[in-house]
Image (tube, rainbow, N blue to C red; front, side, top):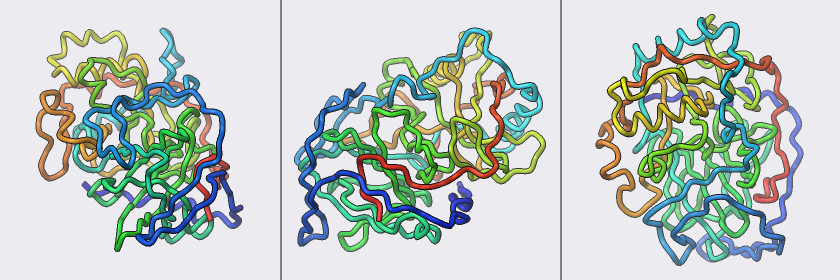
Length: 370
């Protein structure tokens, strides 16, 4: 599955401040890692921490519990009973139907998704080189990023990887991630607090939309327990050019089609549908219910149909989806969702597009960007 190159709009920026976050003193180790003595601060509250400790001494966990961001996050807002529908919903929804008919509707599981790894105070810290052609406008190094020894990015071209530091409540997102000769590098990386909304306020994210990598992800335990209590993130082939709509803070949309949808749009599956009558698989029914209650938010550009995203099995010991999902397609790593009716989607009221979002770095209290 080919993915459209991201971040092309960011290269237009002219001035970038250097943003420094409070990470304490960093000491370089002989293996290229750095060890950081974190500054002491009050521990913020966090909903849903992992059940299994997984710091540098713990290895990969056997199970994961979802990280939700704050209650105020757009991804945690349930759609009201009578939401305002966009006046162009019937037109815009045609592009969703067309994309499904031409390219499919699926959930990325083994490839083209995001693995998550947990860090703590014992995890080695790295100064991650940022190599994208436009990175110099913002930063060329993310200093002090905690990366466990067993971390590995998604194997496909986007090379996404997310690290969550449980001692600081910081999330570190990476795109086009690689490890070479003991050193980590990425096309781009950025960080934020996981007790916030899960959105980079000035864009410059590892996605095309300004959303954190873990926003809208489908977690193994959600499918196992039968409920997803948040909006889903999706990508599709007709992301509209001309900028994002709120809550997205940037966009890599390029489509000029009349029915193209801008990044940041929330799509809802018709809540009047009786899911019991649709011949859904158990996992499709869980996903469809979330689409009725919370919807799905357009967060990235794709050239391969409508895609949802499940947490990568690289995140855990063993296969966390065993007995829950069928084996993913061996070539593309996805599980098809053929029974969810794309012709029953509607587009909720859109805010105006932001044609020239001000992209930059915002202080996160996590990584030091230089």
